[in-house]
Length: 152
Ligand code: SF4
Ligand code: SF4
Image (spheres, rainbow, N blue to C red):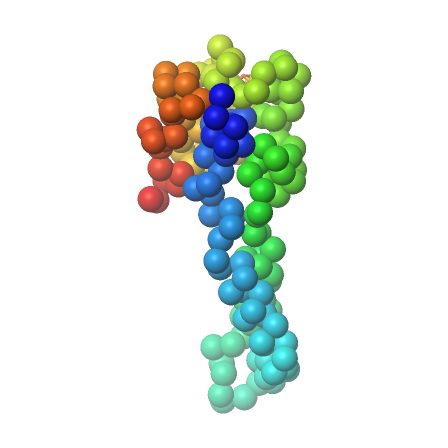
């Protein structure tokens, strides 16, 4: 078995190399921007009511989003990092309890409801990928994978 394919193939059928978190550029850019804004004390500037900068009234919310972008960098595929952002999800736990390396070895894929939390952004991609893994095998499925997000 191709070990790299296995490392990048999550239990749920996601190909981690396509994930927006994985080794992204925007987290570092967000960290750099945050540091620069702190350096110049931009929060103080934004806090003062003035005819200049009325459009900065949502600055605190902006910083909250900036923190989120800076913190969602992921350096490890799910399989080696123990889940998305190191959180072991119910799909991994289910596979572990069945002693299988991924859901493609399970016969309940179609009826399984544990994938619902992935659907808002990924649609049916994980389950479609699982079917490709079943069909082409772990060594050959990657070129047939679905697009990661519903908007791509
Ligand atoms: S943590 Fe769960 S949902 Fe996320 S990629 Fe891994 S198996 Fe899939
Ligand atoms: S029931 Fe099957 S398809 Fe559903 S999470 Fe468990 S192993 Fe995966």
